[in-house]
Length: 149
Ligand SMILES: [Zn+2]
Image (cartoon, rainbow, N blue to C red; front, top):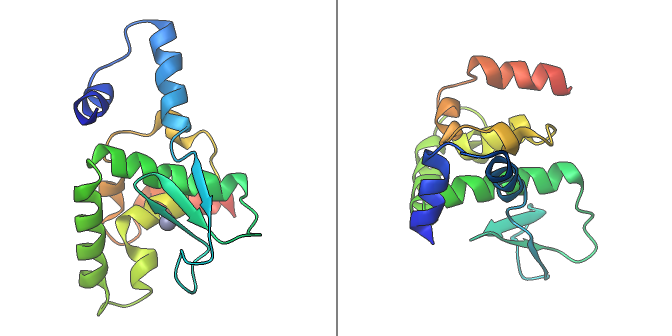
């Protein structure tokens, strides 16, 4: 399963039908929604664990929010899940003593926040796109923010 996911990203679609199928598979990640009071922790509205979205009862899931979570699912899938959580935690720890909100400055979150309003983002998202958000405010991060707001 993991091998197929990696292969999916690394090869180009050969037919139009294949391209359409890939588009769908990229867009419809993180579909399982679990509503519970236990997760996520205080201060957060939703948490995406292994592609399952945990959200408090009564929270409205906007298209923008679902897109944000789908971007996380795409990140998780391309990093074979385990490496995503290791990198996420490490980056958070590194950014804790830095200026600004450590959580918001994690490159995975930067990519998700910068592109959540673009509902077609996942259709054209390049592999490991989050790496461009490691540096402080890269060009297209700013660009995307100006367009959206
Ligand atoms: Zn996020």
